[in-house]
Image (cartoon, rainbow, N blue to C red; front, side, top):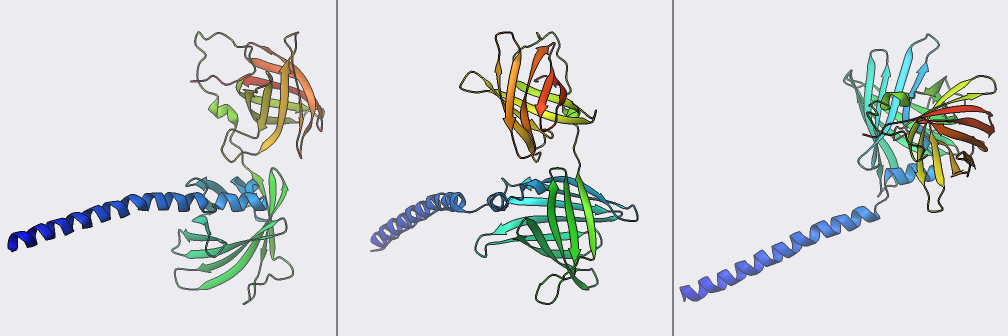
Length: 302
């Protein structure tokens, strides 16, 4: 009898183990499926056209105090990390999307023991952030900041008082103009060519300088790849940083003379040009929205 019971218990235990293994094996599959179907913060920001905010920005108050703020992607564009600095005051936060509520929110903490929660909302071409600050002493303050793109290098921030219903005051009590801070692509152009032979092929990474007809200089970064038609695609960016905006995409081809010709357009730039490669420098002229000359130096590959 005891032997029979032992066998029965052993069989039951084996069934439980098998069931547990089946359930455990199913959990990762379910989690992966849910993740694939879930909307990312990156999707939401892209849908409303606020990708331009990603990057590092600087502003100055009327008294000359410097303000810096940085937005950068993390966790496969599921969150944006925020760093804010004004004088000795510093704040760090995280922006994320709540799918069930369909809300974009932010939680932050500062170096004075305070914290805040923020609700982000789109209003036309403005990204509106409604803040609720709680100081270390428990004092609560509310305000709203609107973020409006001026151009690819500038945005305007306006500060508003908000009432108990979350509505903004008719006029802002303050305005700041932020300028994008670019890290020069020359910092990434380190390394030695060694005995490598100079290449005349256009494909690769380049650092460039454009001088327009008013002798103004613009530094830029370029990634060039061959396409399936035997030509090239030139992607002109502000820098090689992940957040950098693309200035213009150009289609290029090599002529029988060895000269390269290219053309393209974007919201900010359009036109065509030509140039030649000599000793890992691509030099030429560009005519379009802004006309002038360019010089590009090849970045050695490690």
